[in-house]
Amino acid sequence: MVKIVLLDGYELNDDLDWDKLRSVGDCTFYDRTNTANEKEIINRIDGAEIVITHKTPINDYVISQSKNLKYIGIMGTGYDVIDLESASKHNIEVTNVPTYASDAVAQFTFSLLLEVTGQVGLHNQLVHQDHWSQGPDFTFWDKPLYELKDKTLGLIGYGHIAQKVAKLAHAFEMNVVFYNHRPKKIKGNWLKQVSLDELLKTSDVISLHVIQTPQTINLINKTTLAKMKSTAILLNTSRGKLVNESDVADALNQDQLYALATDVVTKEPIQKNNPLLKAKNCYITPHIAWAPFETRERLLSITISNLQTYLSGSIVNSVIERKK
Image (cartoon, rainbow, N blue to C red; front, side, top):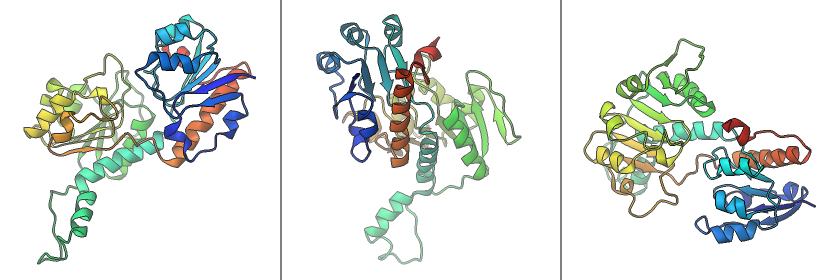
């Protein structure tokens, strides 16, 4: 029976049924693996042909020490935790789960935007703290509130998630523009493809939807921030390293950027010295855009399906093929 090791199942396993994975092979499950401890990772992989990982990195050294390893299944879309060049060199197949969370992340992107513009959380808290009951008027608001209609949303990247965000924005009667490093064919006169410079200069809301690569790390920095409106709202439900956090914190504190709403940060869990924690108008959630029950259930199902397909002699969702 094939030996399967799951390195970090905590984020999924509390309320999901893992029996289907157990039926595929001899499974060893770990809630968490120390991502900084190569020896622990190697010891846990030892003897396994199949490894399932979510965020635990598998680098060249780990791969070179894992002689039986034949397949790595990533429980997620991003594959920056795997050394793909090393995996290819050692004839190890690597798969991921694309688009499993597109609807959830698009929904959450708008949740962040609506929180910034509608301030529901703040005013709910103030009402429960008796600010309304003790006030003289039938209404009050403690921070500015904004309509989305006729505002311009700029999407950096135009993959599955961004396309769903675009449709939501259109429903709110926003103007929608996007920049993609490879031009896209588009339908609909409500959508416009523009250069990155034009997007930065004209957008009232900018939402990041690109993967983390050497080219996209620190995409938002002093230079790009200087091109943006000082009233702009920046949204990030992609990867924390797309944003230079010190530069964004400075821009927020100097009123050069109105707000940042992010579900991701450079180092997770967030560090106490992260400059965003003390920045003005900064909204941070703990990487939960992907986490609705239905989304995690779908993630597990596709992860298992990827593995079953591999064991049957075929391959789907290969990251190795995508990289070529």
